[in-house]
Length: 168
Length: 357
Image 1 (cartoon, chains in turn green, cyan):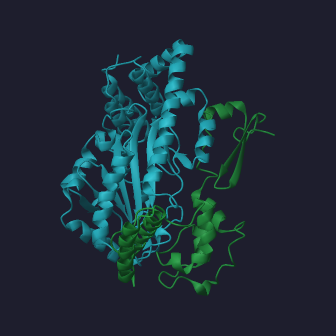
Image 2 (cartoon, each protein chain N blue to C red):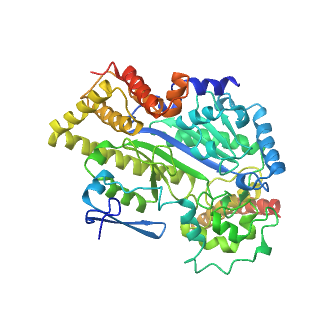
């Protein structure tokens, strides 16, 4: 096998990189590998992010159901799932709802997770904040009960009730 | 033109180039980026005239109101007020991305504060990309400042947020926290000893990616590496920052060990390399930017190890930017071809390093 760079000398350095589950192999001669400073990063050719993304959305994504037809585009921006596959980008915030099922495996593939934990905007996120606070209180309630601190537990229970009323 | 952006275009140094305490010799700068979008308005690449104008106006209006003092005189500038050259200067100073400068969208803008520590790109890949750039390792303070800008904008604009998915972004690789934290590292000893490829593989397994000097899709030059978190969802902001900080500290420790070993095992070869680099920089009549960055990296290492002296780290940071094409042409106040730039570059470097012994 010849070196991929100079195509003249035999390849002596074989590198396998795993990038979001995609395996990339490079074969170089010692000189070309040294020129790269032992640092195999060539974003120009193979590491194009859109290519990578469309491969994530596309083939090999066996958990994804058949994409909706062109007619089933996002009502807000008109983007179809095929467009998303091709560009690797979504069209608007509504796309996340419209293509929720199709996106689920993609998000898991990218992040290993599909649930946000972290900052919540105070505006528009009030209910989310309340719900998170309520989850915290429920944990505290359980802890108080376990420690047999029933008075404290009763106080926490009242707080939870208040919150439930606000959320309703 | 507006005073603040005018100043940032003309000044030699912005906030991140300042000398940093602590690990400033190896960690050049820290950057926090938050991707945010407005609810219901299509993402930048799907904007039409009506939605684009609406989006830009909403953001502009939000910036007209009084901002918290901590945000240091923030100013909104539409790209229609900037020349192609201004945009290139902003890219070279890391205040906007190459993609933002090159996109043909009519709805681009930049919101900058006085010292360039906060730069919010408008209609890059997302409606808002809040960036905070600070010198040295300052991820927590960077996040703090970016968060203040985020809180301010969020109080004026309705963000696209979903309870389950978090902050919704144009590209699914940013969804969730929308946070990309990164550090710019100078790792010459690692590169000289051929350790980078192995270390890079390990970094990948830790959920980090490494890019070049100017971010996504740019080459690694002058032993400068930009390392950032890969995953934006399923981890909290502080987890992301802490994790990056921990990996960075490990890399710094490794680099320091290798530097010590080089100084012991290859003392003469190292001094020879640094001396030659300094010699070429001092006497070259013309020099291209790749060679200049590589030699400046050697000189920087020489300063860090006490082999050379007589220049501050921030002067070297300024040089990384001052030798880029747009800055050279601004300095010469004329358009120049590659050869003219190489000549000018040699002059600019010699002027700056003349105090080095």
